[in-house]
Amino acid sequence: MGVTKTEHFTEEQNELAVLAKAIGHPARIAIIQHLIKVNSCVCGAIVNELPLAQPTVSQHLKELKNAGLIKGNFEGNAICYCLNEEGFAKIKGFFENINSYLENKNNQCC
Image: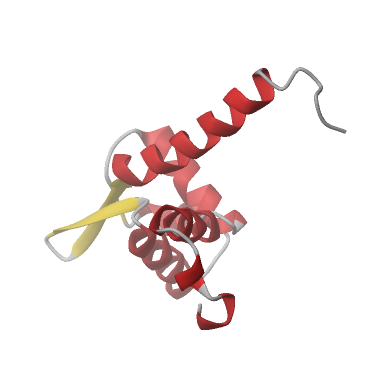
């Protein structure tokens, strides 16, 4: 991220940018939706849910995990994934601020 001069932005702004980038791919949205749907940790079954090769799914899982949106634990030979509430709490707070602004806007702009 050197070109974007991240040092000029707050830690919160940089964290939100990482989270937004992580959910900025349809395969990652599909993974998140699948984890919500099954409402439990998932081991290996994610590959069967997507029209992508296993290494590609693994890369998307890695991006989501690095951003803090999912957690992974080893269970035997497999890694089981579930949503990380802390990462989504940051996104929720950001969108709640936007929602609050929009509700109180009173058509004061444009």
